[in-house]
Image (cartoon, rainbow, N blue to C red; front, side):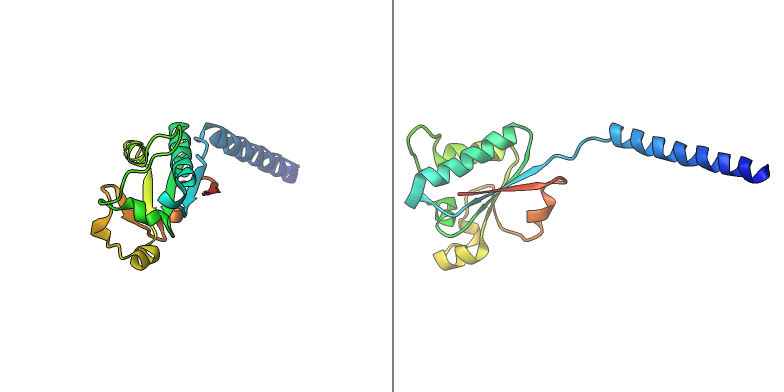
Length: 149
């Protein structure tokens, strides 16, 4: 009889543990997914450049964690002396970068591509940072969706 009582108590404790775990999961905030936007074109393909930045704005305004990584030709438009880029119905490059800054979206430039282009960290527009490996994985707690332009 004692073994049955002990078994019954253990069963009740196990069920209580499962129930409490379920309740914690239901009360926990859902993880936000992040969007990693890779842009490799600059003024050489204004459509791709501005579409990538516009997508970053759209996703950030929709509550997603967003990070923008620029390499190849895209690093050239991130300098203080770069001309503003305009195309069709898109907001301009400067407008999009300003908006991303207000939304606290990190925009990074590839250090190797900067070196190839002769760009120093001090040449970058305000708010643009040199890419850091750890930032790729620490900008969001959820899944990472990658979009390439």
